[in-house]
Length: 219
Image 1 (cartoon, rainbow, N blue to C red):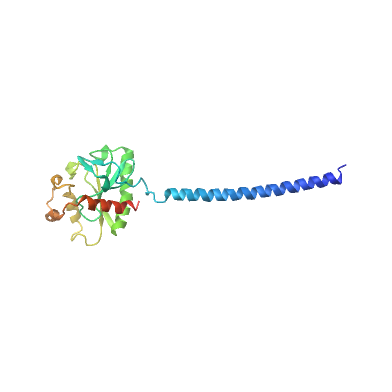
Image 2: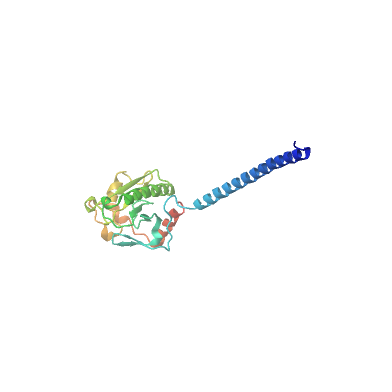
């Protein structure tokens, strides 16, 4: 027979065990919540200030090549491992920027699948930022794929030109401007003569750097 003392001890032990388990569960749950919250905050902090994709460019990083030209780092405002975006020396409209693959390639078909996909993903990200920055309702996105198509620099590049109402008297005049565009005057070989093209003057590196900086903060 079980003595009353033994029975009482057993009941106490069981009760203590249940309470111990309950306390441990409460402690464990609290730690899980705190750990989860900490992890969420840490994850949030890791994304805070980060670019939407790729990363921002620092003006202290290396320059990239655009055909035979060297692009100053201060004018490059966004990059991924395969692509970079920079402001324009001779913009057709405010916010006219260029996006290029880092590997020099003449034609779109010369790009690898990864380079091609990354180029257009970057165009989409850059277009959104530039349109917001300039208050534009849309953009012209253009590629002159090869010299016969009017390519002025032998390096694949995409033009993004944010558009606002009334920026051209005739909306389609933008295509003539793109046709005659060149990064420097001595590379400009227009197939269509644009009378007002000479009115676009080259900008200083300082002004271009300031514009690039205004875009960096939005990625």
